[in-house]
Figure (cartoon, rainbow, N blue to C red):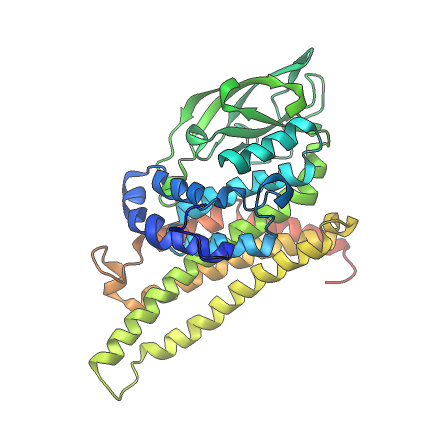
Length: 385
């Protein structure tokens, strides 16, 4: 394990990677819309990619609150790097909790020993973003599988060592009768369908691809994808993506704080008007931190019980996404008001340009309106809030 980045705790190690590598290249990653290769290399050196791999298989055995802290630490320096790390950890969580075959356990061991990077290709062209339904189907011949899928986005897929994807269980299966399968790089072909030239989060390289894959049927998860998603996928995704938005909000708040302190030093003995605005901003930041942290801890309490799939916890998960992304964006906007023109200028040390563009991604990566509509339907039948 690299001594350059390792300080002890997962969050501290992630902060070192962010401060020493991801942060210094973040503007170049954003400007060129390129993969944050240096940051991922540093994550490998610090063995961050195996954070959620059990200790017995060579990983850190980190729990979700710890990983959430590491995501926040990276996002404070580079949101694209943090998202690559977060999305990778979601795939690791699938393997760690549902990889009940020797081949899947072997893949998890390789994540630890080789620091493999895992990507995801669940969304499909024409599905409207509904990952619970597939048009493509897996085909099995003997002990080999094959599939072809037009994926709406495969974030950093061109740089991943393996891609986890969903498909119908067989060609005659219903759209929601899905399985998940690991597609190693050696049996994977990605044909570009669309480019990722986005307003923010540009380094995630979330291009669309026609995914063609073949491999060993032992790499098919034994559980239905619906169970994997409800017990692990949705909770881990909402917490870790929420952690990205909170980390960005912390970065915005830090720049506003620095700007206010600089104003105060210019006029000793007086309190800048912006200091009151900063105090108001911190209440929103605390709320954002609290809502993500609470749901991360709640998941650890529930993950081995049926309650993790209950309607009540489902409401909490939708709420954490909506709250974290909305609060974080409000923190960013208020930080810009505090910094003023210094926050608006890209050349300023208080610039909030990249941070605010990235923050807007939080509200559109699964629309907050769609989640609120689902919650509204649920609340009509819930007896208690």
